[in-house]
Length: 212
Ligand SMILES: [Zn+2]
Image 1 (cartoon, rainbow, N blue to C red):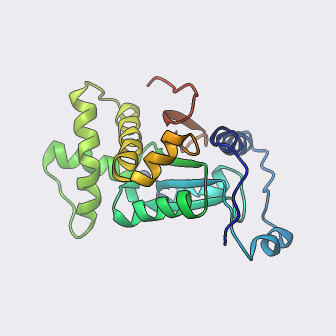
Image 2 (cartoon, helix red, strand yellow):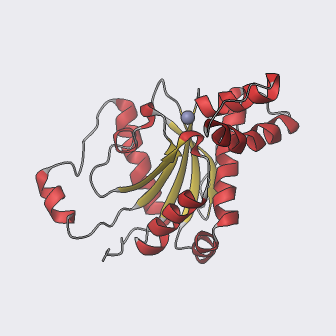
């Protein structure tokens, strides 16, 4: 069985941010990546954060947050679109593994967001199940445009923020934990060029959100 992490949502967020700052600065410590850590956590995992992000290959979770084995419970889909398996995985991380933090991680130049914009602009709809991904990003693009938020950064922030809200709307377990103060959900926009992660949404955490 997993042991409970002792971190608060705010402490977990600080831990994650400090790792990203090391990565951005080019001074990573690569914590928890050795044989000792591997052996230590083999009997049970107790990650301090659920990380739900885009599948983009440049968004490798443990690298960009400078963490290691057993630290992050990672769920990734193209465009971080939400379906039942995503919700179940996030709930597992929060309810069973007792993670105090859920992070939604989007990034600039996201192919899924670009495809949703293209679908709206010229009717280009991809085939197969890629279409399902694009269709789940489209409401975010429509909402951003309706609000006059037309820049790529603004559309991305809208999609990340709506993904945060969607998790809370769909998952009663998660919403209850946030209401009780035992978990928080944050939305981050990652910049591919410099590796920085900007906070654009926070639920259950008293931190400043960057205006876009
Ligand atoms: Zn992406």
